[in-house]
Image 1: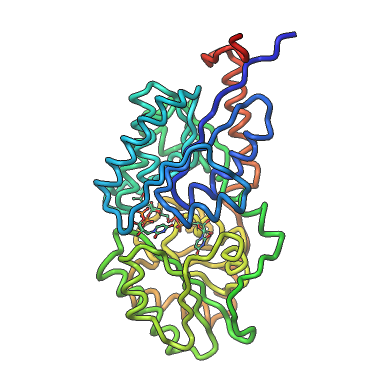
Image 2 (image 1 turned 60 degrees about the vertical axis):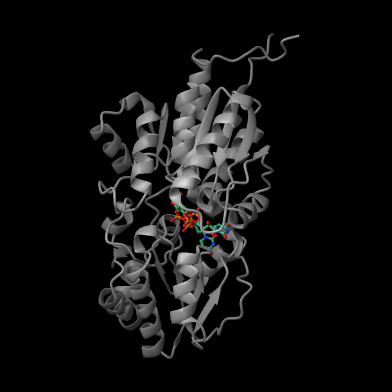
Length: 382
Ligand code: UD1
Ligand code: UDP
């Protein structure tokens, strides 16, 4: 009997969250003989990407080495598009997989469109409806969403967003978010944080990096963190600072040197999961953290005015406080002082997935190939 030809898949990753969320998919592709799997790292991030790929045992087949210090969006977009164009011409995969809403994703979607290569969008359908929040990610999602052949949405509300945009219902697949697959694959290891912490003090974990918060909003976030540390001698704050210079400078200036605040470089994924598990409360503007923390039963105060992840807000385990000093202080203090209020937000719900999203994505692709729609060359042309 003839073995069916393998489906040649190129997975493209550029930044830390893309690597975390694509790792379960890349691992599943590698283990399934139906696929010939290759990985392209744009390296829009460098160190932050490499540490995740190493943790999950992923060795990219191509590396575009795009990152430059303090890169601006226009140059980043232009260099990514040119480099991806060449890579796709060279690789000519049957299909491409991309994840999320970064500039890597938007340019990969465009490059696939120009090359007439179908692509699957993992974590599709997230929307705020506001092009300025998050900036530029909302626009990146719209481009990817308009061009994708498969939309792998994490939740039903993401599916509804795409249906409202007129996307073919048959192209939308509710899979859950692969971030929960990644999280569950490491959280049982009870990872060490690797940073000395006082076991008697409650830990507040902070992350922040959104471009729309650069400048005055980010300074206000820092002022709130400082005030929280001043007001509460029984807490300690751990803040792994994003390497973007627009974040590093003000964080060091406003928070550096305070005895209750530890600023450190970004933590590798394993210790960061350990830090989330150890945390009493998390303050963050991160998308991924809004998905992971509820699954770990940790309340999150989101340092943004809007979120494309309404499910955890509706479940009452995540709260939007904006980059607003008074609201951050009010809500954080209430969570520190009111045990019943805290328990209600630390219930442990996982609206974003059950740990099987990658398997569902693989099944969709296999059934598509099985339907004879894939144009694949014979396994051995000789
Ligand atoms: C990018 C994404 C954002 C995503 C975030 C995840 C865009 C426009 N932004 O934001 O959607 O939520 O990643 O973290 O796609 N840097 C390093 N080392 C690294 C990574 C970054 O030094 O490993 C520094 C560099 O100076 C770089 C800067 O951070 O120029 C900004 O990186 P960039 O990818 O442009 O934007 P992020 O703010 O990281
Ligand atoms: N993360 C990490 N180390 C850190 C901070 C975050 O490994 O110091 C992980 C976090 O668990 C989540 C992902 O990085 O899975 C989120 O990345 P980020 O906040 O940079 O991007 P976003 O999710 O907002 O796009």
